[in-house]
Length: 94
Image 1 (spheres, one colour):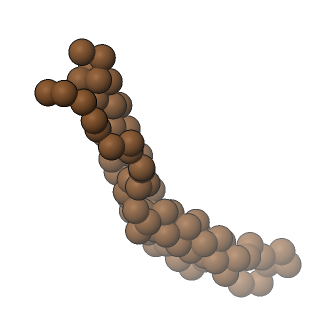
Image 2 (cartoon, rainbow, N blue to C red):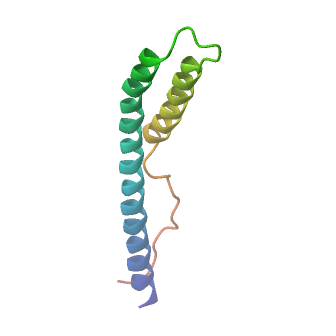
Image 3 (cartoon, rainbow, N blue to C red):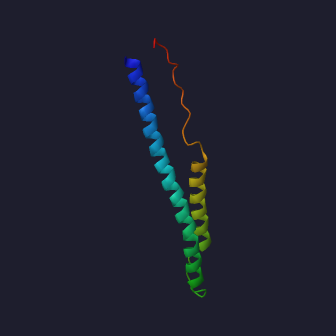
């Protein structure tokens, strides 16, 4: 009797972890979309910058940092959605 309950509990935990994993991946995909949207704002800000200013904002470094964040998130998303797990074989009288 205990083994079927353990199996049901294990499957339930797996489903909860999978739903949570999907929600995280969805949020990370939204972050990538937001980072893409920031590119046009960076272009706009750079276009409005005073070229004669003594101190200039480093737009190239900002673009590089945004790209690094985007690539890091994308690398995580491109990885396996669920880590492989080893389960003990089921044995028992059914």
